[in-house]
Length: 95
Image (cartoon, rainbow, N blue to C red; front, top):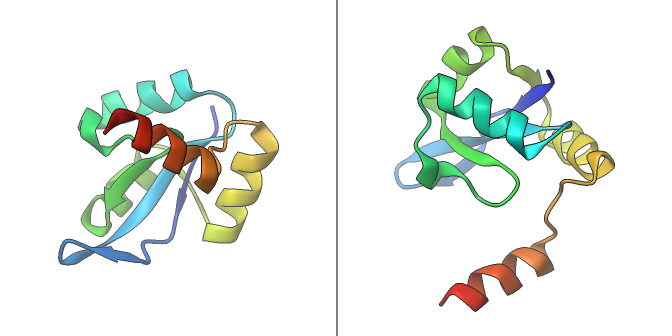
């Protein structure tokens, strides 16, 4: 299992956020997130958004800390990355 978490750097809603991804499968990512108690609403097509206060807990549960650049590189190499264009198209089709 390879679940990755980047450094919490992304500000929103009064905190900073990290991204949790799998470089193997979305099923693996969802299983990890479920075991860790992440809410389904935190899932954003190819990753989970997680607040900084959950970072240490997720690393202790087995998420591998990586830089944001490394996370994107490995997610793209896995073929699981949803591009910004695909993300916009997906969310606009729901509205």
